[in-house]
Length: 291
Image 1 (tube, rainbow, N blue to C red):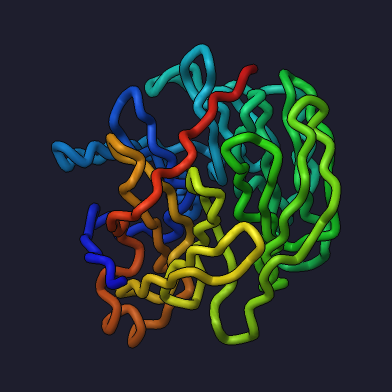
Image 2: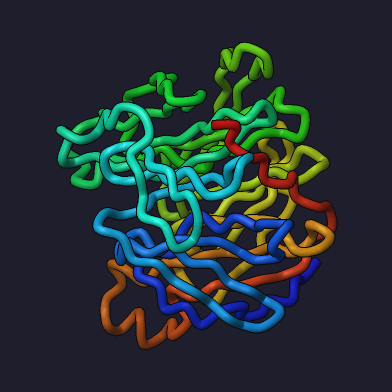
């Protein structure tokens, strides 16, 4: 089935990432990591507002009591409201690790924030997946370069993520009460040159949508990893897909322009923009970090 791809926002982001639909505000929040920006976009009016910080925001979560929990360079920080300044939250566990920053994350149904880091210099496999509960953070899994694609099934019993340079999408059984992961399985391995799994989201049918960085498309996979659909985009570097809108059936895809040469940018004038299309099954709504 062909999808009607629409330009949602002429964002011209360097590294657009982490689109998250806020149902209460009917706005799409997203970040430009390379420019240290947090954005909120109102599709009804076309207004896109931006905040610039001293450090990059790799990911964020909406908080149960309002505001956002940011995954930044040194660790987590709370943004009490749109106009506030970030306040460090818990121990800043990456403060003395210059090659690392926070990268991608998702809240589970219980209200824990699962977020991964990235080794920006690709100097070591020391990026990891962390779980933030209250002010306490624990390392769940290490040995990665770019921890990405965190998403939970609607019942919280299944967790997905990828170490993007490995080209592999993994799934786990998750105990919603304890947060323990088990049964690690590579459910899909993309061959070299076909794109790398970046950010992803799950729909209410349990299917996983992923943006294939350098693959110029997003893919919908069944829970066991079979590709059900691929949607080609007019730019090479989609970074993440989120499902939102009033009925949860509007896909938003952020993209990147960073690292593309002049000829490629000339051929892809919408690199860094945000695209949208309609999907058949609603996305799992974004849960709130309990704090």
